[in-house]
Amino acid sequence: MKTINPKPETVDSKWYVVDAEGQVLGRLSAKIATILRGKHHPEFSPHWDFGDHVVVINAEKVKLTGHKDQQKVYFRHTGFPGGVVFTDYQKMLKEHPERIIEHAVKGMLPKNRLGRKLGKKLKIYVGAEHPHAAQCPVPLPL
Image (tube, rainbow, N blue to C red; front, side, top):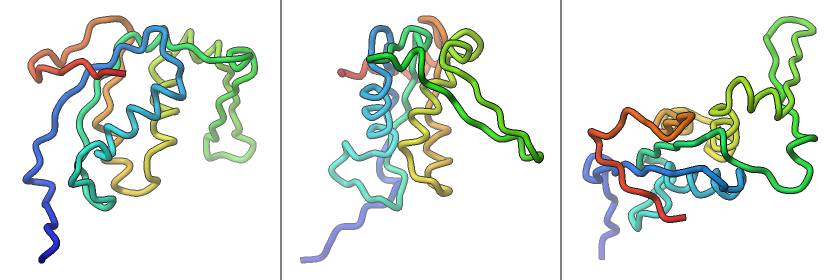
């Protein structure tokens, strides 16, 4: 028998909407990364994009377990000498709550061209409204 090797053009991607209210950040991010990667499809192939689009709403209402809300620190570097910038979780939650989920999910995706392409399929919004009603997103059961 021949091995069937499906092409990404043959698989139609779906749209899912996820309500992050009351969800634990790590568990939610792992589920979203699995959907973006396409591992829930039986024809999954690690070098092709079989993933679906995910819309996350209520990003500011995600929660952390333990004392991580006081201890978690985000690191970035500006590229200049001495350009290390640390941002704590509380400040990130006030200023850019969507970046919390984005940072967690992108850390679970591949670090290559495919991972960057998959990261563009993630749409995160503060509040319960999103502009993707035309795509008819289906609620993702968690």
